[in-house]
Amino acid sequence: MNANELRDKTADQLKDELENLKKEAFNLRFQQATGQLENTARMKTVRRAAAQVKTILNEKAAAAASEA
Image (cartoon, rainbow, N blue to C red):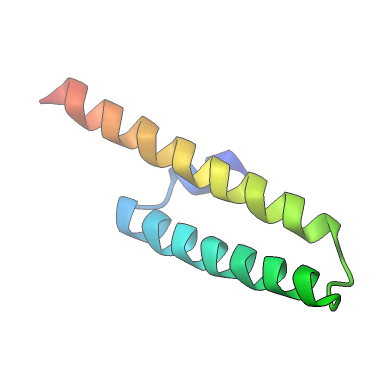
């Protein structure tokens, strides 16, 4: 998912997406610890996606604060 698609979502949708990404990251870490992780590159993509969502959330919060 690219940044433009994320910017089109509402803050609640972004928070749900972030929660899902955090759950997935936890599961991937657990799989890695037990030696069951097959696609190690997925960890990096999930972390980056979570960072993108956080960035967009902060942008939206800053925009809302500047309007008020």
